[in-house]
Image (cartoon, rainbow, N blue to C red; front, side, top):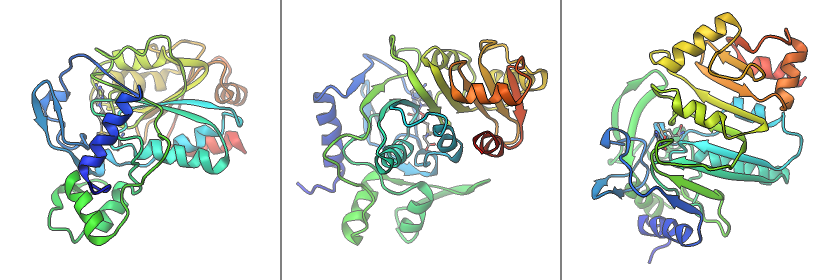
Length: 306
Ligand SMILES: C[S@@+](CC[C@H](N)C(=O)[O-])C[C@H]1O[C@@H](n2cnc3c(N)ncnc32)[C@H](O)[C@@H]1O
């Protein structure tokens, strides 16, 4: 069989499952039963078949803020969890980044669909659009604030890779994602007693209407742990976070946590008391203040790092 086929991608998922790297919830219903543009593999859940596609919404690289946050963990092994990894670009970015720096990072994910941890996707959404722009199977849906919204079936991406000799998926001997939890988070995914140093959610399950996923994620942070996520101001969590940003305290987190709310990008960082980030924040600003608001998280983190 051709090693660059959708079948080999799915076989790698099966292999990872056989090796104990993927845990499936026994029964779950994916988001509104559609998952149109976030599911990157053709997949069947409880008898319902879904098409898999790559799009701008499931191929985002690790964001700059997360890269800055990594600097607050001094050369230590980091336990990283991504909630809603899409096709896995951010995880692969982190894996590659750590490898280049000779650092150790253990990567876990929580998602509706599994990723082949032996075949990372090498291009971000923007790079994919460049490479695929002449492909007749590329579908444009609309023009969004960040550019055109588009999708292409994942099997077509493999065809392009083979026909045009462009390397879109890589091949690894060792998995870049160490463990995957598959199901509907947090309803039927139990992370047990496992804790993580950095939990990252880029428009995944924390970007929703309920507080429960945010509370659950916080309960899985180590003493030096940091949570990063984006929120939606139309929903309850977003409203609470914006209100908390104004008051200097966000009721949903512990008073001993340090919280940064970015009003501009609608992102939140929650740093546990034992983290270096929290210590730097409390030293620089009012040590009693739990929540800071900013319009420029990157600038704020850079000022702490300088
Ligand atoms: C819009 S995609 C974002 C993907 C990636 N973070 C990115 O920015 O490219 C949403 C991701 O969150 C996952 N997801 C959303 N809600 C979820 C839930 N309640 N439980 C598990 N996974 C969820 C989807 O499976 C998908 O991987």
